[in-house]
Image (cartoon, rainbow, N blue to C red):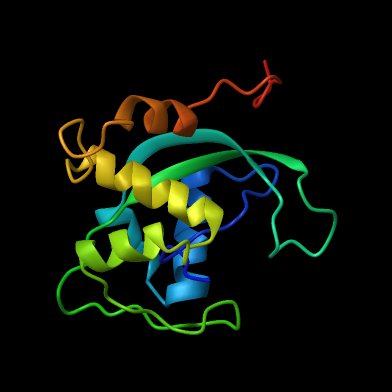
Length: 151
């Protein structure tokens, strides 16, 4: 399945920013100085999904998720390169290609959520071209029924 360029779980005691900087190096060979200079926080997604066919265990289990999203435009001369065995390769996709892949369910569910949020924030998905925009946005920003951070 397709994925976003860089992602990773946040370890205890590590900030979301430090995590994305480390993952960018581990997965895409991007130097920390480049990431720190260019990365922008894009908010938090909270949503609930269910385990599907790609999940090795029981199907239909409820899975809450919280994602810290970041945007980063790379300089034209920077090309991400796989650094570890988690990534097979990178492909530059146009917006229409991403939209087709989303509709074809080619992205991992968490990556799809991040990409839909990106397309909404950048005015590609609008109320004029998507009648369910409010519903989609609410699904990406659910109130989870438990505490997600220390008090």
